[in-house]
Figure 1 (tube, rainbow, N blue to C red):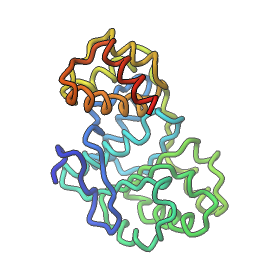
Figure 2 (spheres, one colour):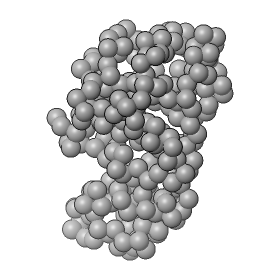
Figure 3 (cartoon, rainbow, N blue to C red):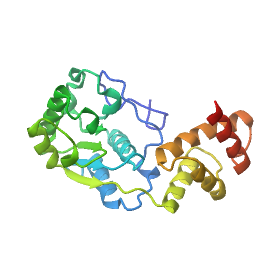
Figure 4 (cartoon, one colour):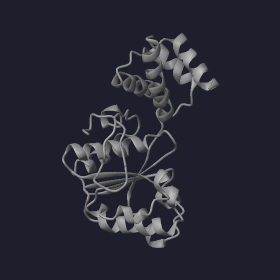
Length: 241
């Protein structure tokens, strides 16, 4: 599968790790995060050899940037791997052997495995493998020093990463992001309807994009445009199910 498909394998590893097709640098509204985005993009393009730690709340864009970086690396013929630890925390770490040979590894939800000896040992090994050459991106809800690692050497390595706190988008920036995602999906969504959707669902971009996908399917099934009455109808119907 190619990067333009719905999802594709980030690396020839035993785990079925996939990237969503809308996780692109082009679809990320930067807001107050310009420096962080530029740095992640430079690491993905192998223009900088750093270990970078992104942190912030749900919906701040951590997953989007990690997946965009893997896609960018793939498009530049570099091997990459996206690893969502909240989802894969119970997978045996032996399945990650060989990760040190990849051009880029993006580790999401690092805090999900904090305190788990096997995973902490594997993360420490990753830090050592990528130290000096870069290509390791990590994301968590908190900063490295706020992540409750039990392995002191891992905590020390993590504290040495270049860290960025991702700031939430303000309303107008989020509106621009929502309209951009709709356009990327081929949806005709005007600003008034987008604002209506903003006001009716949780304000994180992940939640908004999930509703865009639902509305896309509903619009195709009903052969109706995305208007405020139609969006209201779909929201009510799906929440009642």
